[in-house]
Amino acid sequence: MLDCIFCKIVNKEIPNYTVYEDDFVLAFLDIFPHAQGHTVVIPKKHYDNFLSLTNDEAKLLITGVQNAMQKIQTTLNPDGFNVGWNENPAGGQVVPHLHVHIFPRYQGDGGSSVHSIIKNSGNKTPKEVFELFK
Ligand code: 5GP
Ligand code: ZN
Image 1 (cartoon, protein in one colour):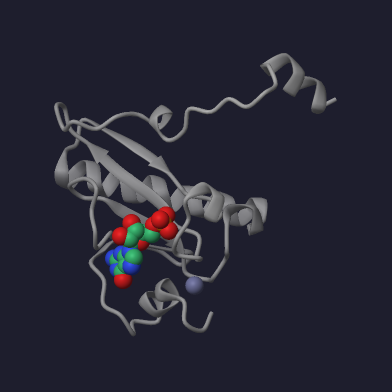
Image 2 (spheres, helix red, strand yellow):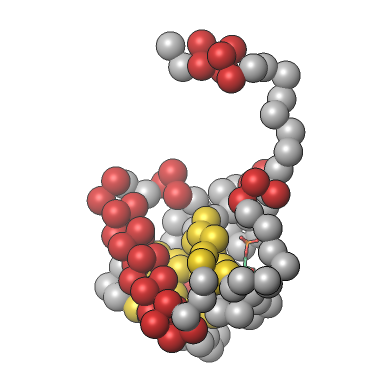
């Protein structure tokens, strides 16, 4: 996609520090890291978000994420990870090209868990929400 910064990285118009690459994904170090080895994994083709992928493409992306994590584990030996993505602006997405964040975690690094992203359960109980799925 024209003017997409991550498409430009795939096309090598902008340099990157590649951690892992295969036919479907490119994984590279985030330029403003929130953790040592903070990596983003992107599909080489432009997709706005995860829900735009087919099931088969989603499998290829998740396989790429696992392989990148494996590479980070071997290289940096973190004690854990947080892995996820910001889906759409409401979810905090800034770069409009789907990317999965890998945050390597280290004992005593001062970070928190995914539960710290939001604490606003809305006005329905889990039972009331469940009723909507029926
Ligand atoms: P988002 O908030 O969209 O989930 O995250 C976008 C991420 O992309 C941010 O963590 C930001 O630091 C990273 N980023 C933005 N521009 C570049 C760039 O040109 N190169 C790299 N390596 N990372 C970038
Ligand atoms: Zn793009």
